[in-house]
Image 1 (cartoon, rainbow, N blue to C red):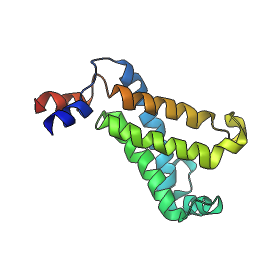
Image 2: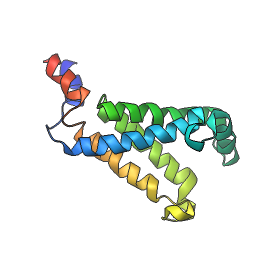
Image 3: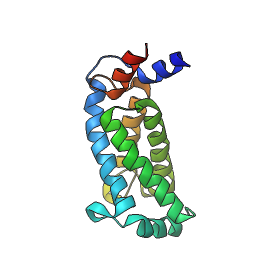
Image 4: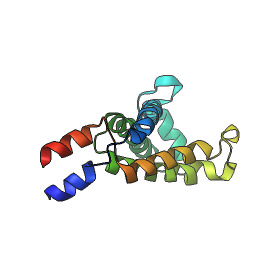
Length: 147
């Protein structure tokens, strides 16, 4: 069990994942807070839930809660570099759902509400799922103490 936890937490001592974790974490926290709390011009759980119901994602409130929570709390965990691999995997799945349930029919470009932004977030989170948190992360700190 200790070995599995260490494998999940340990990553190469590189700054490259940090360069992804910070901006992606901030972006996801902001988008999640729009869905959950109505911050930054968002509609909160009620409004987001109604919209999700209107596009066929039901129950809308629960879908808004799950999407908003994965983005907000997942972004926070990425920012801290805590449980980075499993968090990034969940966020990758969230981005796949967003791309195929909302954006794919609009083409690639963001200007047309396309999947361009979701694809960029998917690439970043998939990369973090593979690489781990890198230097300056709580994951590496915990892994060094588990030994």
